[in-house]
Image (tube, rainbow, N blue to C red):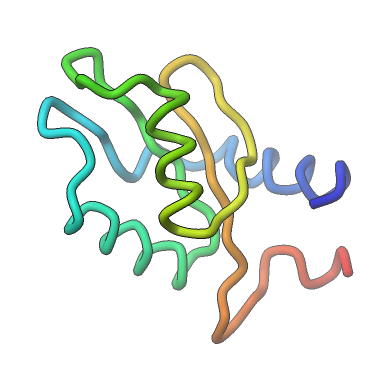
Length: 97
């Protein structure tokens, strides 16, 4: 991902609310499936790691990036944003290519 593409995704993410939260139950297979489906539809997702979570923000981010084959966009505090181009209908970065 180029710097220009990352900057565009950051500007898009700025207006998003955290769609998913990682809490005391951590990251389950069902949680991963939900994020996978969401990424296929929307290409970008903002995730918050709650204070009561046993997961560290960077560990959760690295784990999800590996499991979902997605790219890191940004992290601010306990919130991070990941991106994966949709296989069926990519749209967010189409004008950048």
